[in-house]
Image: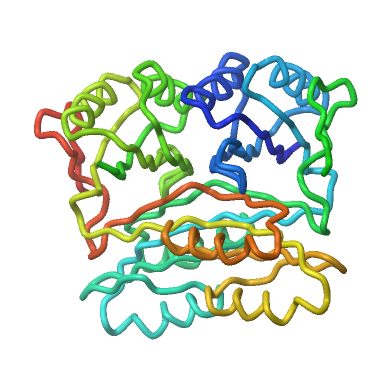
Amino acid sequence: MLSIIAVMVENRAGVLSRVSNLFARRGFNISSLAVGETQNPEISRITLSLDVSAEELAQMVKQLYKLPDVLIVRNLTHERYCAREFVFFKVSCVASQRGEVINLINIFRGHIVDVSADSLTFEVSGAEEKIAALQQLLNEYGILELVRTGQIAIERGSSSFSAPLKEDSHTEEVSE
Amino acid sequence: MLSIIAVMVENRAGVLSRVSNLFARRGFNISSLAVGETQNPEISRITLSLDVSAEELAQMVKQLYKLPDVLIVRNLTHERYCAREFVFFKVSCVASQRGEVINLINIFRGHIVDVSADSLTFEVSGAEEKIAALQQLLNEYGILELVRTGQIAIERGSSSFSAPLKEDSHTEEVSE
C-alpha cells in the first residue's frame, strides 16, 4: 500500500541521516522523500512516500518515535490531503517543434524557464500521475534532463499539523 | 559560501542514507535536500544546498565519489542555472480577508488548492528569496502550516547532466 507520511523533526545536523538509516536498515523502499524547514525554522518536515503494509508502517512509526529528534509522525494517507511534486523538464526541441511543445506545457500549466536553439526547459507541478502522463508525452521529443523534488503533501481544511499519529506518543502539542 | 550541488546516484535502497551519513559525519549543515528519480528510473538525482568553503566542497566531492552508488557530482553554483523550491502554505484567513490574501497569491503566481471557512491553502514555486518574501507577508495573517520540497536546480541551455565535476572521476558517460 502506498502511504504518505509526514515526520516533524528538530532541525539539527544528522537528523535526516538518522531517519533515512532507519528505513535503510529495514530495506524499506522509499519512493520519494522531501525535506524542508517549516514556519518554525527550528522544525523541519520530512514527507515520505513508501510502499509498505499497514503493520510495517505501524512498526516504522514506533521506531521513528524512538529517535530523539522526531516530534510528530502523521499518516496522511487516510486524511483528505493534497499531494504534489515539482519538476524541471529539459526537452530536446528545435524551433519547428516549439509550438507543439509549448502547447503541451500550457495544457499541463507549466512555465518555461529557459530556451535554447535545440531545447526547452520548464517547470511544472502536479500529482504524480499528471507528471507521469506528461513525461510519457515528452518522451517523443526526447527528455534531456528531469529533476524532481519528491512529493509533498498537506491536509485539506484549516487543521494544522499538531495531533500525533499515535495516542501513546511521547509528544504533546500545547495549543495557544 | 552557499553552494548547490547535484549528485546522480543509482536508485538503490539505502543510497540516501549513505549520502546523508557522509554529510552528518562531518557535521556539514545541509540547508536543503531534494531527491527524486530522473528520466532513467534506475538513476536518482539528489540536489543539495549547503554552506561550505570551496576546500570543504572539493573534499566532499572526493568523498562522494568513493561511495559505490554515486555516478556523477556536479557543482551548479558556477553554472548558469535555474533553482526553485515548491511550497504549500496554509494561511489563517476568514472570509473578509480572503480578497487580500488572494491578491498576494496572484502576485506571487500561486495556485489555491483548498479553502475552508477560516483558512486558505495554496501552492507556489520560486527562488528561495521569493518564498522568504511571501512568507514574511503572510506572517501578518498567521501561517498555520508551511511544507517545502527543498530546492532543485537545473542548468540553463541544452547541455544535460553528463560531464563529471572532477577530471579524476571514476565515472565515464558513454553517449549513444
